[in-house]
Length: 340
Image (cartoon, rainbow, N blue to C red; front, side, top):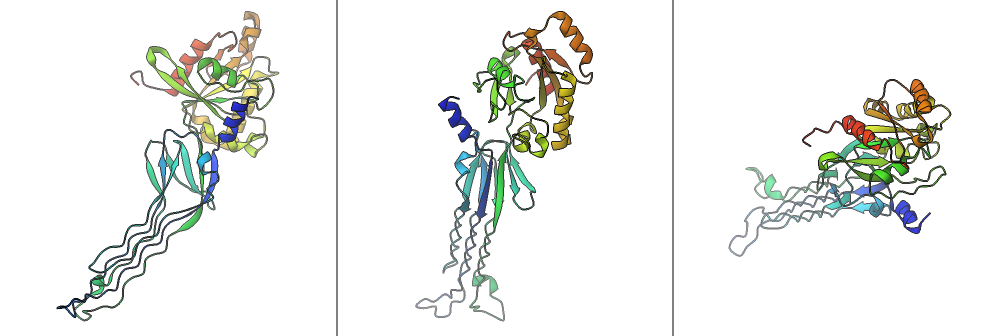
């Protein structure tokens, strides 16, 4: 494996767990106005500033969570205390975590999803800072003209949060190791995934931009090969299955020299169903790969055995046959409008 490839794999981080702490609110001031000619001027204490938020912000230039991998604890700034002459304390400095598009934030304990980031510069508050306390000016009344007390600021919040990346792509490739996914991506796009004849060559997801007719294009994602039991964590397990949750369509790839093409397809379907049944609601296309090994008679025999509920195409990435038909079927599957 090349040095650059190893670096790319070590740099791709799609899951981080971070302890976040938002800022405390500043205390309100209990100051009483005292000037040379105004000895009893009454309350003039200002409010405390709010504590800083912990904010997550989308950045289309990022493709990994690597920059957050070693930031186990992040803290926003505290709000400033209120002052005399009704001056409000400074607002605590917000802490902004920039993330790639496709990042999901969830609570580490409950696993509840807080939000998803899909747009550049999109911002969400992960933890709110504490509110600043009210100054004594708010507590003046007809019966208490000179209140000598003010509110303390609210404490900030703290909790463990999980950020996980789900790649944003139009088409996700689904298949066992060595089904030809990386080869297809390298032929259709400018992506240069590692390609070799052994399982799990692909250890990190790869994205490729696929050119289509009339200057149109779509994005294809190659994830590590699925094995039977992946939904239970076998092999590379569910760590990578989440990357196909966002795809508009799924391209199932089964090599023509498989012992049973239909059975292999059904096993793949079964793994997706166990992981997330909603994945089966996506449009699907089946590609029978390595078709350059087949003659017309063998292709006719295989067609008799293929599942009837999915459009299919015989392709060869090496001989570059069937690829135009494949792109047509994928374009239809992702349902991109003609004027997109």
